[in-house]
Amino acid sequence: MLQTGTETRLMVENGVATIRETLVETAQKWLEQQDLKDDVGKDMTLRAPKEERWGDLCTNLILLLCQEDKSMQEQAFQEISVAVKLLPAVQDVTLSDSGYLNIRLVEDYWLDRLALILTDFKAFSAARSVSEGQKLVLTVPPETRDLVSARQVWNAQILQKLGIRLGWDVQIEEGEILEQRGFYTETAISKCTEQAARMAVLSNGSDFSINFSPVLAVDRSYDNPVFSLPYAHARIQSLLERVTLQTDGEPSLLEAGSGFDFPIEQKIARFICEWPERLEQCLRNADIIHLTSFLHEVTLLFFRLVDQMRPQSSDYLTEDGRGAARQLLFRAIDKLICEGLALLEFDIAEEFI
Image (cartoon, rainbow, N blue to C red; front, side):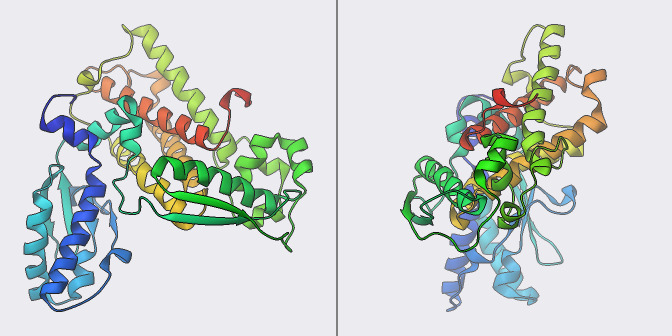
């Protein structure tokens, strides 16, 4: 996995982002050859297919270009697939009967991306986005007496930090006092702590800031990110510490093998690799809720895995040939949670674990 040459470059490169860029660029060239004009990038989707046997990614690009015209679909596919197959992360590209383009990545791609989370998180977070250098101006109220106003200020402050990381120029300007007022900020903080109140309102829309519930904000359930994120971190740390005591310490990345056996493992590995795109989505939509919802979904997937595999009472994390890869997955999940909480200015040590 961590080898010299092509494999190392492949692991560092965000292959999915490169595929997206290549698809859009090749499609635009194809449209120009047909004397057509369209911005296919805004409507194109690139996601995991409904069934894993179809590949790692699928896109509606051919349908956007050709609609139901089978002859044109084949022509567009031939040109676009040639460009995509040249990418180092891609193993194969096929066109389905429904018109969707299915893309299969090289075997170790997802495992390499997980390894990168632990070895070079900055490189992992780089989305190779054409949006770098964009400007975002956020207007916030001059005071934070209520949670509607406080949410806007907290959201802007975190987006500005994120902008520095991703090369965006995020500026904050003071606006007018909002007519719509929410739950009193001071009261919410006194009942929940500041970081719990902040996380709760940033994880929900503006309605929650108006109808704020201190009980729901600190509810000890998986449905609440204020609880589920630090709790998932604590569970992972406990499981990995137990494994370390049973073995000779943490396995090296080279011991991680070639991948994962179970669908839930594969789903988590692919999902957490969406981190760079989710960060950019926050800036594009000017709302950090895309990060909090992403992190929350990561924890829900982790808890589902724990329920299915029972790592606390089995050899799941130490099994020969697979245990190292599973430990890598757990460590990558934990790294993502910790990085996300740090960006959100949420101190795990202050919480009730």
